[in-house]
Amino acid sequence: MRKKRKSTFGLRLDQLADLFDVAAKDRALTVANNTDRRLAQMLRCQLTEVLPGNVLLFPSGTKISDNKQCDLTTLAGLSLLQIFFSPETSISQLQLIKEACKRLTTTSVSEAELAVATTIYHAAIASCLVHHTKKITQHSYEKLVESFTLLIEKKWMAIELVDLFSWARGICKKKRVNK
Image 1 (tube, rainbow, N blue to C red):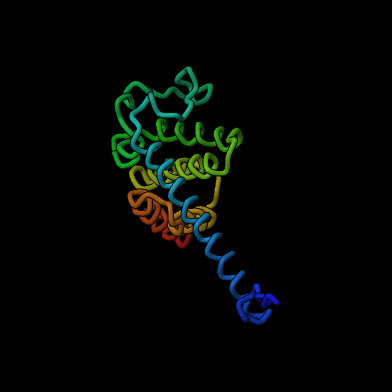
Image 2 (image 1 turned 120 degrees about the vertical axis):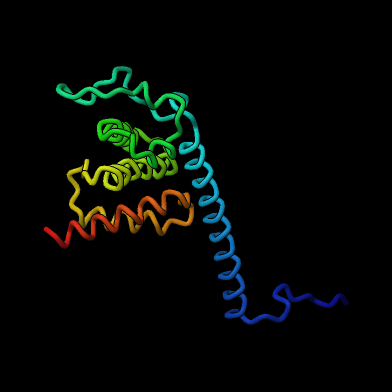
């Protein structure tokens, strides 16, 4: 007669449940790490790609609104990182980038695209605060502090943007207090 084998290797039900829980958490962590890595790569690509080859879809004309003009030709050959860290980038150019990303947030086909567009949107706002001490959004300083804090805490965030968001957050905190 054949001896019947135990399929649980002598583990109790609660031990099996713990084992399955550990395996499920490990899988979720692996998926999260892969997502973070993918987002970091997508963001890095957007930040370092030279304009106008950048995937951001700017309007064919240079108009921001009916009464403002923006010279996009001076941005050609620069990356978004260079643009965001240059004090020479004009308020209207940063406004155009912000508006282009705002449109992208409504047309993004994936969560990753939405995250990258939202990040670049906030980077344009942060750059304007840092280099021109001007707020180019209707969001309150309080709301901007919250947004910059959330972005700073993202594991996939580019270190350069963490610095930019930190500087901008400090400005927003001061403006919020001085109101």
